[in-house]
Length: 342
Image (cartoon, rainbow, N blue to C red):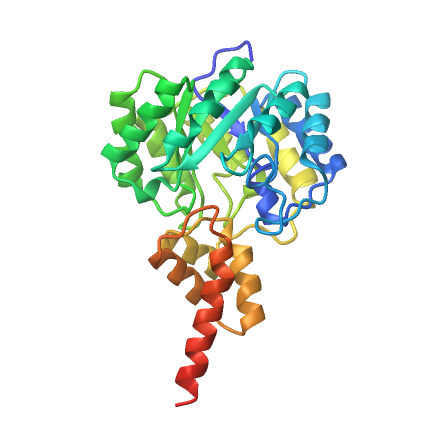
């Protein structure tokens, strides 16, 4: 990472992409992807369960492989890239963070709901003590007005975060909403601002470019769009677009294209596209990882998954409330049966 970069890219396919494949990454897949990303000169590679450290559970989805094995595998093949992990306080613990640090990770992203930054203090503080690049990650940012977002971001900054991210977990933000949020943080914080998009409304690239125009310098992407919902900003496409704009990332475009085509595409169960359910995620403002959970619940109860997602949006469900999905599905099925019997 010696050359000058205007934008620092974090590749999230080995974390956010875990949602898309039901957390079934193998050690060999992680080695192949991480090595190729490192060779393409991507500076940060995030590796963990889709819901962060210790996310493997019945509620969030069981991992095929222990995530510490995946993290260790990624670290072993990265010569220049820093491997990062995501931690959601209440799911992951300080102990998990310590264990990941011992394996050689270089970055920790501490993620909270957009109005709950206060629960991140000890985790951000510990990540700093461990010498990690420490990122505050404000999820579901569409659910807070810019002034509230600033308030929460300033808390993370006060705890010691090196960077704070606006995270569009539902892929629900429109470009003008991204603009006002990034601008507000840029005017209020002393530290760099990051942006994490989802493509549920086909706006990930547009929103990312708007974020960059407003001053965000830390940007997430997922190669081949391998991420929750309809995926994230597609990394190899982003690299090409930024190159056309004269914005330096230091990432090798051809190598990213080859990685996407030859290594990541075969991992995908189905090609990433905007399906009716992922579209509803963005439309209703629902956490992107809820899609597969809602589809399974809809099949179990014989109802339309869109009805589940719309109701979850109405109830303002947030990450960590996956258990609500089955409850909502059962209620809808009961209501439908009641209406049908009249």
